[in-house]
Length: 200
Image 1 (tube, rainbow, N blue to C red):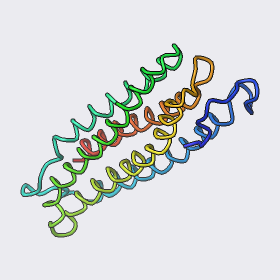
Image 2 (image 1 turned 180 degrees about the vertical axis):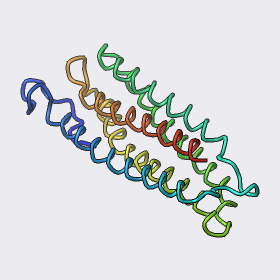
Image 3 (image 1 turned 90 degrees about the horizontal axis):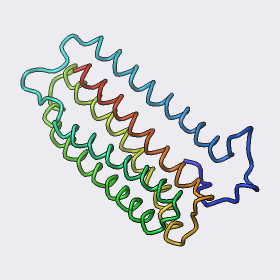
């Protein structure tokens, strides 16, 4: 996530074409993350195709808690969109409130994921190659969770600056970039979830 999350003066911002340097940095980050997630998904699909027996009847199904995790990410994205709208409308208290709700939602998502991981522990005890069912589940969901943890940094920075009233209707790029990061993680999660259900 780009570190330029402060409310810059639009006139002094470094730009490439019509894109700010911070926005370009975020695009580059998204490209690198897409390559990482894409390679992981391809690896999962190849592993799945090479193992006709993927999950034995004794192994747990994918946790229903994954749906709760999805709902939490949808809420988080909604809070971030409302935060951007609050910044555009110069509603400082609303901006802080929505960012706080987004922060709590991200933490709740990780708690929900930890419950999902515990549910899948019995599948790790299967004999090879069946344990790959659990291993790939942990790999994809943990990879995503690591990026969620990383998202606390920009979210915390933006929240801290919002509390200092450093954003306004003309200076809120940091809030917008933070929203884009969480939107991206939401989309990636939907792709990962679809891949897991399709593969299982």
